[in-house]
Image (cartoon, rainbow, N blue to C red):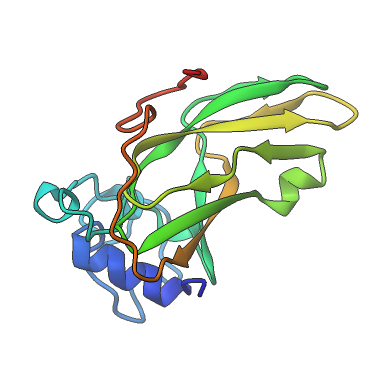
Amino acid sequence: MILSASEIAERLKDSGCINDLSDDCCNGTASGNCHCAGAPAGVNNKIPNDLGADGRALIITPFSWESLQPASYDLRVAHETVLPRGSCTLVPTLERVELPVDLAATLRCRSSFGRKGVMIGAGFVDPGFRGQLTLCLVNMGAGDVPLVKNNRVVQMIFHEVKGGKRLYDGRYQDSHGVIQSRS
């Protein structure tokens, strides 16, 4: 089962990443004036360690209401870069994520970048992963593709994992910034 926006938001609220889910919260509110998440532009950098440690909480920080889609969450790039034509570029996400034991995620390039020839490799996140994600973005288009900090480039789609008891404990756990291949 794929999680809907309301299910994603409810789980983020339970973990403390967002503080209010009222229907009128942030709708039509200018960026930076959102009152509901407790920080500018709908962002709350609180990382609730008490829930995340045992693999029960979904955490995305900094959270953005704009990134919450009907059945996914858009991940943003952490800094400006250019995707050169014909090559793979490793780009860190702005967001730090923690997946609980009952959720996995697939990563898909947003269609607006796909139409420019950008594809993503290595698009799966195991239950229990913690850290920033390193996006493997391949530009197969006709020219270079510039990325601006905070561009929403990749969709993270959450899938329910039935009967999961094992958490990811691999070499990319607690990643920060771009992480090269460790194999």
